[in-house]
Length: 500
Image (cartoon, rainbow, N blue to C red; front, side):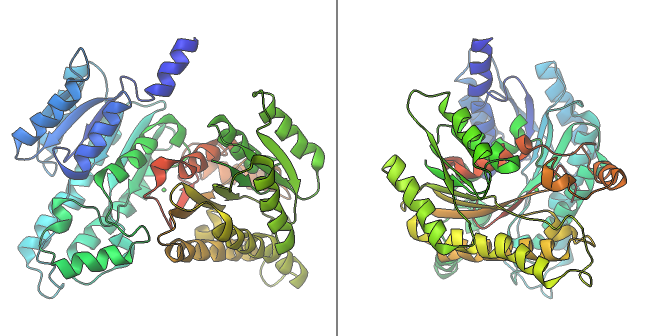
């Protein structure tokens, strides 16, 4: 059993069959190689250059005593060829497909305005980017193994939210893919298949460089907080995470301080980070017994203390400063990771009209002011030079905008805006700033004030047919806290099982 657990940890995708479209070069190639390194068997799809595809296959197969990759030519906008692509995968590996990554895409390197985009170029862009994704997703929804572990991952683009002139057809095609992914995630409720997008920013590939001047490239680099272009290898680990079991609750989206970590989601995050080797500061506001229990649970697995409990009100700057002081004193090291998990919700679920000013102030005092103070102290104190992480927990309610959650949703929207700005302001520090935004999670805070009918409605709206658990959120934060997430910065990760 121990050997089996080690194998699962080392090769989390052991013997799962993955199709990666457009994987003979660029981002698709990097994804294919990364999935292979996690134990997957690969179908390398290409549209024209068989030599490049064969090279990727050879690279994968050279590391194994038996073939673990094949190359298959297919035009992804042709349903018959996509069907043959899945047939080839099943025939070669005698197994249903587990993972589909739609990586194929085209971009008009002339960067024309919409006014100057020819109908032929528009049609070609949508034929590959939107129609191709639709055809592959449809076939994948039919053929991917049900019951858990099935994954559909589409590559879109950060430009879908940037709306830059000169990218009209490209952005529109990727926006279509993102909308389709969100709907498909809901439609596949009960199958155990998750559907997500990864939306890269500027990545150093042939597709990026095509048609760009040196000035255009320099401007893009200057706009990036990391001060460089992304690499295909920056994207591959994100796809690898989404392809694995620990990403189940992502559907339709090292010394850490974890605030609010004596119970609920914060506790699960703290325990998960400890399991990854981190030393922990368990922050609490009132219940020292719960915090001490978490500390004992972590320290029981080690010969030397790896966790301490520190009481602090996150909306008080002096107490937050003391929180960081305690971390540095206990572990003789700067803090590497800050997770802002503390939060409050009015369990009466009043309309905005019926929300008292006192309740509004309390919500913003903890959720927004507390996050601001912690982020500000973290930005000053977290170790620079790489590996620094600030992660704030927000809520999918910030986009669901449900009546009865006015102050809460507004407070979390404020945090999300702040996180996106701070990520840019920390350019050059090596510190990334992101949000994890859970949906309905089975915690005391979720259940407070809810009727059985309200709980049932929340469950019915989730494609997984259940409430999330704190343990569904923790691995996402664990990923954001690690080195593999370096190119994820200023992002909101919706950890809601497809609820939104």
